[in-house]
Image (tube, rainbow, N blue to C red):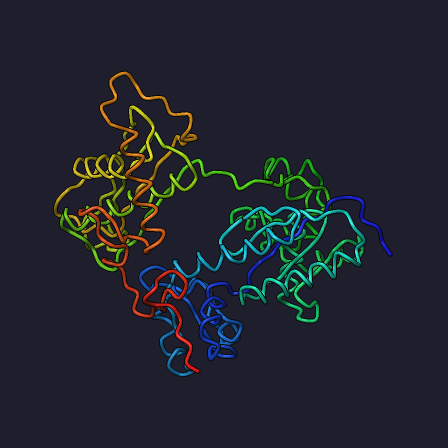
Length: 426
């Protein structure tokens, strides 16, 4: 038995997450090629293994694969973010129950901090954790474990490539790690971006093993401290900090592209007020307030035959706020200032920054807003929307996210809307 006195890192990665969420509620999809599309049903953002085997690429536009869809009966879905977000929370809740500590990295990934134990126990632990997540949520996962976050990421990829690993891969022996890195493409390593990947390829560095054979000085001079950090992680030295708590976001952005160009101010205003409302709700959810607000609008950069326009408005609130009323009012005012008639707008967005804890707010001497009243109102709205469904109560100026988007292949929101809950016939 090999002892492991030092902490190990794990990476739990949900397999083909969006597709897996759809399959949980429609088992007839198992074994069939399935793809999930991006906003406005534009590009492929998730593929089943069967769809990958057909040659469908990640990011491929829908119009390019219509013949594939018809020929091979590929099932197509629009992105159902309410469903995917709720299923993600269920996966993370299971991980929190069974792992010493987790760090949520994305909607379908979480790092695990594993207690020092024998390697044999860690392997069994990973397999059991994968089974538990699958049993509790229906989502298949791959769990990679190693001395660093970067190596754990690589281990999780091996799980997907080799089913015999039983959904859990533990890499701890130096000779095994070397063997894996010798075949692992440098461009697929976490932390190696497209620009650095191209530079390394031009220098004849194609694998992770070749990268680790470089000198630290060489890496430092060409890739800076970030490159050195990745280089050390691949050599087994932890350099990327593990966050034990869910850290609050320091900025929040909500944006969306539209299915068609919007020319009228009222149409664009509906999108901006909707995004501003969502931003305010997210602030309250993490018990924060923001002092900076940005609103931006963009025309369709792919239309060379149309005039182009991009503008971003920004204001600072005298007193940091999380009030939907205050944020929507300010966003509307900024939109009025930057909107220009005669342009077809393809995207809008709202961003808040300079975020701080809500309990640290101090009103200015000239503050005219009844903040306790706003606080009670926002708490009431959030409580009703949480119980009755998002946007049960909303401002009259708001549109809905789907007003100007294509979602022709949208599945029901099985877990977040009462009127779309799954019905089982017996």
